[in-house]
Image (cartoon, rainbow, N blue to C red; front, top):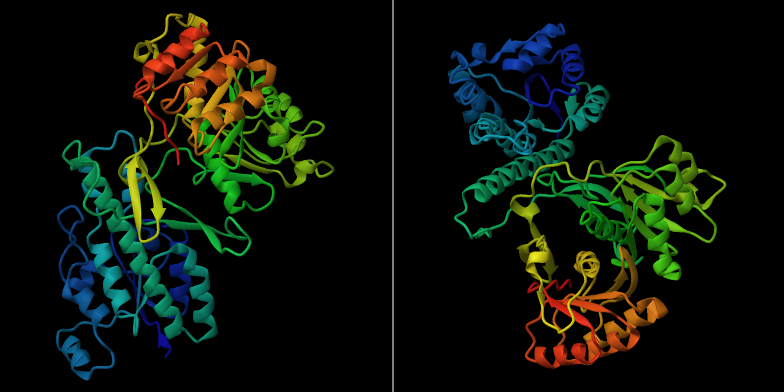
Length: 529
C-alpha cells in the first residue's frame, strides 16, 4: 500500500543534504515541521517551516532536552490510520497526522571519541527525543516513513516523484528496519561507554556485551571461494586500523587480505623506529627496523624472499620514493600495502599500469599514534566460536630491561638485550607455538603454529641457516623440554628470551649453560591462537 506524504517532521544532527531534501519535499507540497538548529537552517535557505512549538503549544525547554516529547508529535506519528477510533481521537485533540519523520541522532560516538571529552559532554550528547521519534515512526511503518540516514534522501525523492508523492509499503518497511538498527547501535554505544567508564575495576567484562557493527563492504568471498563474506567496522573504535583505513588504489580487498593487513599493521605498531613487516597467512615472513624505510623493507624481504612473494606489507612510516622503488623491483610481488601514508611522488611508482603495481592495493591509515584510546568492546580481543564468543583484554603488555632475569652463567651483552627485546616484540605476533630468530633488528627465521615447540625451533633454525650463528631467539612460551634450546644452541644461537615457568626449567638452563648460551626469563607469555 502506498502512502502519500503530506506532512514531515525534520530534525537532524547530521545536516548533510537536509536543506536540498527539504526543498524538494516542499516543492511537492509537503508541509515541513522542524526544531531548533534544523528549523533555522531550513528557514535561512528559504524553506517554509512550522516550528515545533507551534505544533505542541509549548516552548522548547531545558536547554533543548524537551521539545518533541509531546502527544501532538507522537500522536501524529503513532496513530493507526486503519482504526477510525485512532483518527477520531487525534482529531478531537487537534493533532494532525505526520507521514514522514526525518531524524538522525546526536553525535554521541564522535563526542566520546575526543580524548579530552568530559562526562558532562558525553551525557549531553545522549539523545532522548530523537530515538523516541525514530522508534515511534518505525513502529508505525504501515503509515509513516522514517528517514534516519542521509544516504537515503536521493532514493526517497526519486520514489516520491515516480509515485505522485507516495512511498510504497516495501520502502517504508525497509526504512523501519534500518531505523531500528540505527537506534540499537546508538544505545549500544552509550551502554559500552558508560559500562567502560563505571565498571568497578578489575571488572572490565560486563554481564552483556552489545556490539553493533557497520557493514563497510561485501567481499567477493571468504577464506575460500565457496564462502560468502562481508567486512564490518566497529564504530566505537577510533584508533588507526585496517577498518578505518582509506583504500587509495588497487583491486577490491579480499577476506584474507583484510585479515593479513590487520596482522601486519598491529606488528609495526610495536616499533618506534622505521619498520616494515611482510605478512603471509597472518604470520611475519619478514620484519625489520632500520634508519630508513627502504632499508627496513630490504632487510624484511631478505628474511624469506620466497614466502614474501604475494605477501602483505605494513610500514609505520609513509611510503617514500626509495621504498616504493624497492617494493616494485625485480622478482617482487605483493598483494597490498598499509601505511600511515604515501608520498605523492611514490604513488605513480606503485600504481603504474605497465607494472604489476596496477592492481596493488594501497591503504592509508594515518598517524599510528593518533586516535582515541581503546575502550569498551574495542579494548577487547574477541574470538568467535560456534554458539558463542570468547573475550579477553588485548595483549598490549610490554616488557623492558627491568623485567628480564638472567638465569644462565653467561649474561647477555647490552647489545644482545636490545636484540632480545626486538625479537620479543615480534614473537607476540606469531601463531603459537612461536619461535623467532633475529639479529640486530632483522628477522632471520620463524617457526609458527606447530603442535610442539621443538619443531618450531627447527623451522626457525632451518630458515635462518648460517645466519643463526650469533643471533638471538625468542620463544612465546616456556620450553617444556631442553630439546628446543639444544637445537638452537647447536645452530649457534647466542641468547634466548622466554617466559620461564616450566617444571623442567633447571634442565633447560643446564643445557644453555653447557653451550655457553645466555638465557633470560621475562615472566610473560604470548600465546596467539
